[in-house]
Every structure is written in C-alpha cells, then in structure tokens.
Image (tube, rainbow, N blue to C red):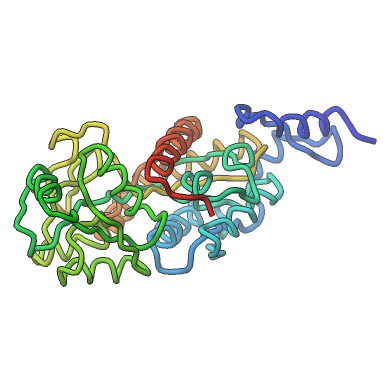
Length: 336
C-alpha cells in the first residue's frame, strides 16, 4: 500500500523549485532518520566522475576523495563514467538511491547541456541535491605571439579591420572555451570564426604555431605556455587574479565587469538525499578545502579551491544555466 511518505516524495519531483524537499522514501514509516544520519557513512562512498581519468574534474575528485576518506572514516572511491558530454555519469547518480553513498562530481557541462541537447536522461535541477562547490579553473584569453596586439582593444580593432576577421580555436563544439569566446564576441564585438579541435592540447598547439589567432583556454593548460612566452595572455576571466599569472589583469579590471568564464566543479547527490547527510558532507568538504596541502596541490595545477553552502551551489547552477543558455541561443548553436 502506498504511504503518505511515498506520495509526498513522488509529488515533490514535479516541482522544479523544490530542490530542497527532503522527503526520504523508506520501507517503513518508523525508520529513524536521525539515527541514519548520525551513523553515516557506514560503507564506502562512490564519487562518480563523468569524465575519463586525467582531466581537471578527475584531479579535483581524486584529491578530495583522499581527504574525505580520512575525515569520514570510510573509503571514498572515484569511479569514472565518461561519455555523452557527462550524461552517462550524471544519469547514474540521478537514478541512484538518495542515501549519500553515490555522489557526482559535476562540472560546467552540467549547466550547458540543457541548451546543447534537445533532451537529457535526467532533469538538471530537480534530479539532484547540491552539496558544495569545490573548485574553479579560470579561463585565460590568449593570442598568438605572432599577433601584433597587446590589449583587448587592439585585438577587437584588428578583427574589425581584417577583411574576414580573425579565427579562434576551441577544444570542440560546445566546450567551455568555445562558449567563453562566444560570450566575449557578444560583449566586445570581436569578429572571429570558430575552428574546433579535438581537445585542449591540439587547440593550444595551433595557437602556438599561429594557425589560429586567439582562444580561451584554462589556466591549468595555458599557464606554462604564457610564462614561456609561447602565447600572450590578455586577460583572465575570473573575479581575482591568478597566483600563477599575477601580472595578467582580470576581465573586470579591463572594463568587462560582467565577464566571467571559469571551469567549475561541484558535488551533487541524488534528489531527496537527507538534509543531515548533505550537511555532514558539506562540513567535511569545507574543512578539506581549507587544508593547506590540498590548496597548494590545486594551485600548482592552476586550480582554485572554492567551497559553498548547498543553497549557494543551487543558486550558482541556476545562474549558470541561464547565462550559457543565452550564449548558446545568441551564437546560433543548434541542440544535438
């Protein structure tokens, strides 16, 4: 027989704004949630990374998993589930029991996929419970060292005076650097044609060789090339200057206060995960991200440790969905 608790859980999924509805479906109404939360975790936790090993999301997840294993007293195991622009790993978590034992390392595709795909096997908002932001990797506006420009104004003027404009590269259609450049074009009037490469490595190689004129790239993939003068950095798309490139101004300092384009990472759980479990995970994540050894390890790779409350992550996700959906529409990108 369906209980009132079951009906409440089923109904709450119909309302997009009720992401903090903490009803918990259980086999018996007398199940003791305080006891469950107090003992959590009593088994290993899987942290699903929806990318192949070796990328930024994987790096952040594995370093954080070590810290959480120590503080929670249970193994936090990273499980890579790449494919379909993170949809495979995300769907796995969306359909998992809301008990805190399967978690998702979310990243920028989580908020761009709703605009880039006609349908998804989950609802980006209502099928997940936000836990915390974890880190950001700022994007850097780069130009070929062969290009005779040293400022954004010079870059835009050159693009407008060149008959066919300039060209810019990205690691692929719909990737963070691609959308960052489309946002930049919208705000500055830059004239540039997109050339898609198969990954960040080929993109940077093409920029160094002068095969493309300009590109956005992550701080972690471009920092060494800037320091070696292989490419020139005109600005960094984050709220603060990067410690690895302290002489590169932020876009806000350069007159673009609303321009921010960073790869970000957050942790999500299935919808209806008990609030007490979410709060325990959030508390341990915040403590882990304050550890100096973890911050130093992140910084060496161009990654900035950033934590948040569950509510702050939920708000951030909403704003990112709205921002990038607008960019995709104005750029004329067709959903796949």
